[in-house]
Structure formats: C-alpha cells, structure tokens
Image: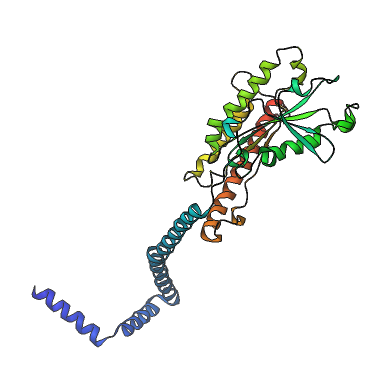
Length: 338
C-alpha cells in the first residue's frame, strides 16, 4: 500500500513539475534523437489515426444515429399524413375479378374514333359476309389495370390501350373491303383487364395469372366449333400487358422482387394445360413511375427514399427481362451456348 501511494505521489509531482506539453516535447526530442525524422512522422501518423477513429466513433454513435432517427421519424409522420390526406378512389364497375368474362370489344369507326361494345365475336360479326377477326388483348397488374379513379374502363388504362391497338391493327368501316390495306387484318380488339389495388408481383402471380389462363381456356374451348376456329385466328391471345412493381417499392422485403417477377413472367408465358401460350405472343411490361415527381408525396425524405427504391426495382425488372429474353433466344436456337 505504501509503494502504490508513493508511486502516485511521484506521478503527481512529475506531472506538476513537467506539464503535458513539455513532456510531449521532450518525448518528440527523444524520438528525433533516437529515430530521426521518420520516427516523428510515424508518431504523428499514429496520433492522427487515433484522432480520426475517435471522431468517426463519435459521429457514428451520436450524429449519424441521431440523423437516421430524425429521418425515420419524419418518414413515418409523412407516411401517416399521406395515408390520411390522400383520397381513396374507387375503381369502375365490374373491375378486377368481376371483369366481364366475355371481355369488352373495341372497333374502329374511323381513324380518330373508336366504339366500345360488349358481347361475343359471333354477335359482333353477325350479318357480315366476311370473316370477323378479333385481336385479343389481356392486361394484368395492380391498381392502374383495375382502373382506380376512373368511372369506366373505356377511359382507364385498359380501354386506352385497347383503343391504341385498334388504331394499329383494325380496319375502319371504310376499309372493310380491302383486307391488306396498311397491314390491318382485324375487325376489332377484345380486351380483358384483371387488376387489383395493392398487389405485389407475387400477388399478381397468385391472383391475376389464373384469370389470364381462364381466358385462354375459354378461347380455346370456343374454338372447338367450326366458325369459332376462324375467330381464334392463329392463337388465343395476341398480346399481354403486365404492370407490377409499384407496390414492391413499399414492400419491406424488396430483395425478393427478382425471384417473384421471374416466376410471374414464367407463369404468364406457360399455361398449365397447354404448355406455352405462344412463343410469338408479345408480353409488354410497363416501367415504374418516378416517385420523386408524384404530387402527393413530400419531396424529402419520403419522395427521395421511395424514388431510390423505385429505381432499384426498375433495375431489377430490366435485368429479369433481359435474362428471360436471353433464355428464349437460347431455346429458339438463335443463340448457341458452348
């Protein structure tokens, strides 16, 4: 006990008679005398490294954590504000799973005007001397496909898309006599729109793809007759439009999107009963919107965070599309692997 007490007294007296700056200068003088200038440089480098590490620990433990906490709290408050203030828009009548099973038909009256009607191909082409040919279009996805905020499907995404196809592939009333005019081979576009608000890619695969397969079943079963086989015209579905990924931006597990969208595309292209729907049937996949430009989202931090996640989901979607296209080219023999 006496030795410890005398040692403490000696250290106290030494620090009293020799201040810290003087001890530090004497330490540097000894290093210069013993190791030269390189020793001083190495000592300063070690001291600077300790200072940087200590500063980083302080920022990590205090500043960064506080900034992250404030940002997370602000994000939660903004999310609650958006949920409360954003109006809940309703879809049109007979949307989603209740969409008319026979679909809706769009015919081209003239170059600028389309006519939308409901009914089968037999009733549409009844009384016509020529064979009535339809272009069949199926849209599946989430809220835009369901038609949220629109009073009728004709003004929603599905109806506008069908009208655009009608102007490309259908003949108007004045063009009925010339079948090869401008390459237009169809008399109308029949479309089905199966969407539901809030669905992720996995939800679209689970709930909407079976409805697509049901349309294929209905068309193929109706083609067993003698006149309906002509209406089928080469294949049951001529084009498929897919919209997904918007709700995956809000999903707490965005890393599963790659596997989910790959499984979704495979389920669309392969019918459980008939194998592949058709290798030449185009699958049109719509991209994601820019979340930073949505007017009902605050710009920071909510808009910035959702915009970053949206760009990530868009990148994953483009990657999956490229891989699927490469797989199809390998299967068709256009690309040979060693």
